[in-house]
Figure 1 (cartoon, rainbow, N blue to C red):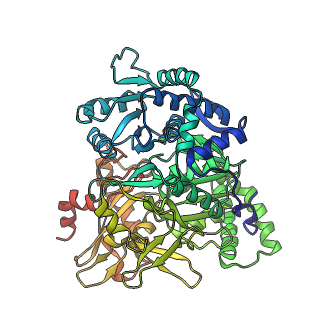
Figure 2 (cartoon, rainbow, N blue to C red):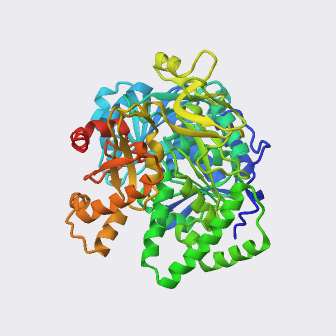
Figure 3 (cartoon, helix red, strand yellow):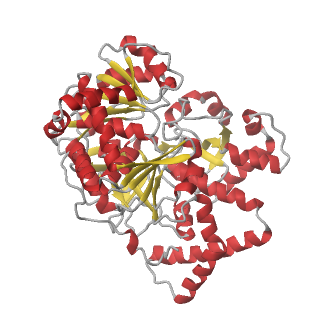
Length: 618
């Protein structure tokens, strides 16, 4: 059982736990040091398969040897177009071990986006997951003269394919074994030739305001940052972690793959994004990092399940979460917890809280980490009341991930914490923009020197585009993106994210975009939580035939209005939302309105739904 009044078990580590000044050097030191220990696990055909460090090293050595056999040269770029699976990690580490540059492409990207990213990065080798991703590559390869080979992880459905450009991962590994037998020192020599200042990876921004930009990160920046992470967030070799966010996103690449590479913590790969709730209960991670969308979904599931529980169960939960909230309030205020309250928490844990944590899959979690988007402070407090501290971190692609973080012994919901020890963070005195400086800041944007100069000033400060405040303790708070701040027709400055985060605390709301720039009042576009709203409709005999009819049902409209009314009470009159519109299309990561991390693209949504927005102001 977690003891909220004693958080000593989640204090971070400061000493270096794995040597190496480049990612491949660090990886191969890890193989030598941890050989028989399990590093990764992945579920295949219903069975969890384990990969030891030795097995991982063997596979990476073969793939790297295969790349050398194909003529892959130092500083060449290889891209990976795949979901988050172990083969992604193997390809990434093999590319880096060859002295190459590794670039990730979202598996939801269309063929035209794949073409742009391969062209911009100068990709010569493209790894793809399966026939679906291969089709995209084959569609655009005619426009990619630098592309030499396409390597397929999973050849199911492609057994009869005969294409001189396409090769299976198994065949590449066979070529690698032959090459390594003839040239046993070839791969180690390439590893030794990699310098810390060399470009290691490209991480493309989501491109919400134009073409994606390739953020360049050096080996030095990656190693420096991942060691810094260990002074910010506690992670040990005996920790169980989940790997399910896109590996081409900085959050999972640094906070998942490379951080676990450094610490030795085990990486558990989910079957697919849809099985995350099921897999998290199987894995029961001891450290769990996710985006707010995931934490909101778990909370919604508990709230909906509670409505179906018996009266006794509901009463037990209400009393138990009340006790947890009392303790959370004291912990947040830095006050001691008396013996009677500790006893009550033991009872509350037995009655309900432990079962709720098991239902979610966080019963073994020492703590939770949230980032990549703002989260409701009330949600942070709810998880703390359950018995699991939630630490919020803030950063971006250009800062190599986390730049600030909530310390375990001083949780402040609504804050992103003080600057991490490995970089400087400040608020611009005139604009209020958050700025970052340190070795973790990226090298610049590939092929875009002007954009780089706009982003990093002459003194090395990165202009993040986020607006925020800092308190007397040095804790920062993000108020909004500079480009998202709304100035109403009455001249009132409004930060839409505060209202949106409160609204997303509802189990019936997945995402929201507040509108009102140069307008007389605020409105909001809402994406409902399909599963929970459908459940509500079924329980209340609301007729609907499809998703669109569900959003138009008067009862659903009234339900969402109640949620808006609840949030409106927390804001001043000028900051309250007067009207709303429900998106009548069920969106997924393949839709242009959503980022790969499942956030609505504000600018695109406003453009695409302009008629509906105008209707709310008539």
